[in-house]
Image (tube, rainbow, N blue to C red; front, side, top):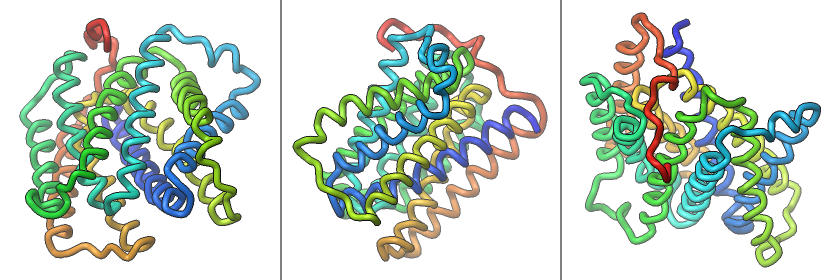
Length: 298
């Protein structure tokens, strides 16, 4: 299997885990509050990572890019907090659809900051997938309420996280990136926890554990994917999360898709299949060694 194919498969798995985590987080946030869901996400991942790497914790904690690790962790925390809060105000599929401007931001950012190429097939895949997302959310409808600002903030922050992850991905142990992203989030959210703590029921506690597990697997797969595949090539596959979010919206919250949602999902799938076919017909993904050094501040 080529580097491109492996990178795409890991990205699809990461997106599936992230969207499943979001569906679980919505349930926890509605039954308790957003801070409880965030604490499960970050404190749970921090504990899980520490347990898994305990024999080599010193080497894992050693980083060549402390500023970038802090920055990417802050991006991820901002994205997660904004998105989780948006889940309590918007439908699961709608919240995900609004955040799905993120692949366009990643593609443009990869060209500007990382020197990645913007070939016609990548641009076509991004545009087609975004058309699918627009069919689903239908601008001008109730989806665009003031509450839409939260997933929009999440989209910009997540694009920053993806680009910084792409830059450090092949240069550091993936567990190092996992460790720092979890550590910052756990420290910040734990300081907020005393004013928001609600003793969870057994069911909520199990959901909180599931959030931690899904978040850890998703982030590890994403880091590995971005370490061997270009961000611009992988960007269209973020739209797979919209399809999974629609599924969980039906199963968990009774949010049934209409005809437009189904049509948009088919367009998104078609765009992903097209990019998969074009990018895996031979050759391998270039590694980030050729990427430009980001300007100071990124």
